Length: 469
Image (tube, helix red, strand yellow):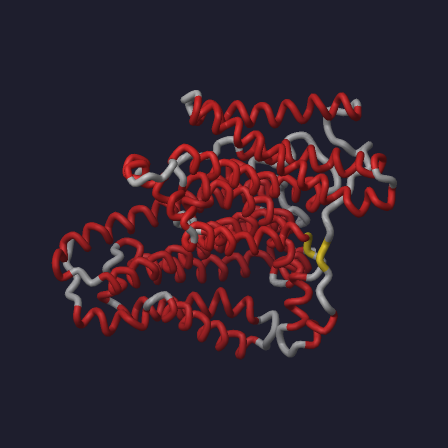
């Protein structure tokens, strides 16, 4: 059983599962990003998701009575989504009214919205169904699933894999990942996005040049509520076809952290959301092994701790780079330090992925029966731990002193090549035999290092003498 589970982790079905479970994290995360950039943290995301999830299920179920079964099944999901998102937006406006107009504390107002979403959905559910746990007695509907054209499977090398990953995904998953680019365009390519960012960074200065700060923040909260509502709709009409009490399971609170972990950018927020989705999907797969139930249950908590560690390291490295920039004074080379900072994030991620190997190794030593017994588990666990320690060791110098990336350019490239061969080599083994997979991993690792600015360092380091701080 454990071999089947391990093989399934390196498969298209596992990647498809990651996309599916990332969706209810990514959508509210985009909402949190928009409100954060406007200077109003939307603490009420959890309650808004619950309200939208419940409303969507109820409306889709009753639509079949209102319009007839055939018409109701066609329009019910969309009507449920529209009204569910509308309720979420109304709650966001309520939060804005309490905080922006009545000057109530934003945290307390957000907590009140969460309590309203949790308790209100249960109370109304009991009135409609007589059940405080779920809406299984209602014939609710699901959002449509997108079927890809069959010819995609005929594309050489990647066609079948791409088809298996993206075929039969909920339309909400497509909406979530396409929304990343919509939000990026909104924030960085429109006047409203400029006003929104100005209102969050310096509201007094924004108001002095005529930007309506309060109205901009209201609109930001409305957009935040819209994305939270879409995330809730996916939980009850894409993930499942019913509403369960407090079914969001803290995803609204996770969404508050993902923009910070993603550098407060849409693409970074998507990356952080995918990381949480990966661990969520991994917990589901590990749960099928004969291991103590506490192990899969702890994976999400380990992921949260690792995310906080990555964020802390990023913040520490940012401060270090700023100090070094200040020390250079007029000799400051912007391109050089941008490359250093991007590559420092790469080294952080590569080291933290190796930490996952350590945790898996410990699990195999602690519960060998879930991995085929002691004879099978212990050698693999020992090898896994050794490889993970080597990967941590080659990246550690660049985490302790970020300027080493520029001083030891080829060592940084070598660390990336080693990690690329291990991590990406495992991924490419889905398509190729071991030797070509290893070569592809090396090439992909090198390309990643070059794309993040590594190609500039040998040139810039000659023109820039990094200061010490």
